[in-house]
Image 1 (spheres, helix red, strand yellow):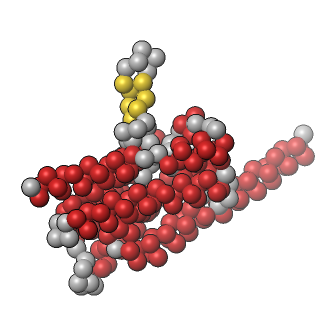
Image 2 (spheres, rainbow, N blue to C red; image 1 turned 90 degrees about the vertical axis):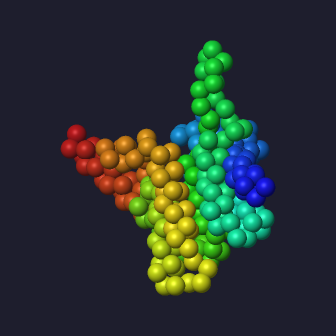
Image 3 (tube, rainbow, N blue to C red; image 1 turned 30 degrees about the vertical axis):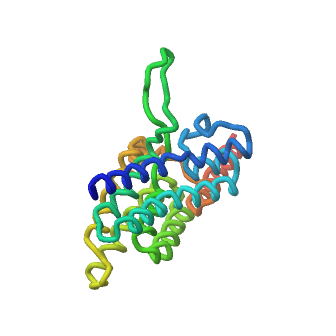
Length: 236
């Protein structure tokens, strides 16, 4: 019976993660389909591109809450089942990246794939659900990466990496409620994010990944390009 309950908790995590808040927020604000904008993903970064800062922030917060809620429900229903505590928010990441509610079909009506995001926000949410103070560490570090390096894909992956580090430090420090399973959560989350971001990783490697304009890197890049344009025009 417990196995069935735990399976239901994981399924619930997937269904919660599948809720495409980015699509809903952008649709309500602008009437646009976020899947037709830029990367086509439904996460906070693309919502920001499609409908502005407010839409992006709201989407990110709601997506974080999906992962947190999945973990909280699992902990509440089965307090002693640490495996299901990590599997439920991991399922939320899978649901976010491959939403049951966002199937895509080809011209012949044949199923092609499930659409979604990259998983950074629900990954953060899951970490918060496992240990609430994690948000006070991971969120500022993620923001630092975003506003300095300026790559949304790197920021997304850094969230899971920071979770691995935070949970590992807690275990090594002997925190009474710490577990290596929490570290495993971060490792699997990182693998899921990297899989979803394969195209972006390829762009990072060949130097064509998009830089966020509001970041330090983005500002420096714009200044450099402007300077180059001015020099070129002067030479002409």
